[in-house]
Each structure stands twice: as C-alpha cells, then as structure tokens.
Image 1 (cartoon, rainbow, N blue to C red):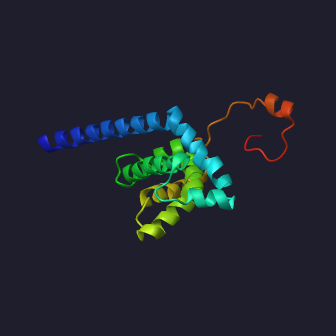
Image 2 (cartoon, rainbow, N blue to C red):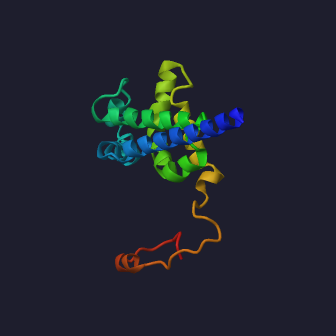
Image 3 (cartoon, one colour):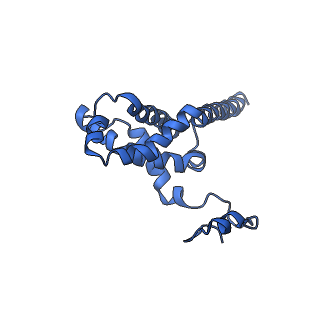
Length: 172
C-alpha cells in the first residue's frame, strides 16, 4: 500500500512539475520581448542573410546587437527541447502548443546554429532545439491538432472576402 501511495504521489509531483514547466515556457514565449525576438529570427534574420554585407555582420561570433536575439530564441527552445526529450514536458503537448513557432524559429536560426557548430566543432550545440524542431516537422507535428470527428464552427469568411484573398484554404 505504501509503494502504491508513493507511485501515485510521484505521478502527481510529475504532473505538477510539467504544469510549472509549461506555464514558465508559455510565460516566456508570450512575453513581448521574446515575441519580438522570435519575429526577428523567423522573418527579419533570413532576409538580412540575403545581403552579403549583413551576412558578414550576422556571422560574427559571439553575435552582436540584434543578432543576440537569435541566441535568446535558440536557448529557450534548447531548454524546451531538453524538457521534452527527458519527459518533463509532454511531447504531444509541446508540438500542439508551440509547433509552428518552433519550426519558424528553427528555420530562421539554422544558418547560425550550423555555423556555430562548425566553428566550435561541436555537433551537440542546440541539439535539443533541433530535436524539438524535428518533432514539430514530423507527420505527427504537421497533422491537424483538432480532434478527429469533432465538428468545426461554420467559417466566417467576411474578412477573407473583403480582402479578395485568393489561393488554397485550410478551412472550407
């Protein structure tokens, strides 16, 4: 009976630890400074790498100025990836909550990560971030997170219609 009680208590503790870790990650990811950093890494950084002069500046190690944002983003997702890999945070929940943001950030930061790995001769650099990105890019990560056989609300296309948006739609 004592062993069973201990196992139940450990499960509750693990659940509490997961909740605390998820809430802490969510708070960090939703913070305005981090959102700005993720937007820079995901959208602005890749554009800047197209310019040879800017590419030279972006490849300085350690990074300078706004390029420090790349390291900030990488480090958070490195931590989250370690949490997922070690079972502290549930894999499916992480993919469900942060899959798109992780993939955008990985795609933006990958050039700097591979450069740093080469310069430091260490393939382990940001490997938990890479692991998380792989999970998010897998078939499991790409499929709809919406529960099967659950109806959807009728689409409101008024804004789509007003902007004359053309092309394929995930919602019909």
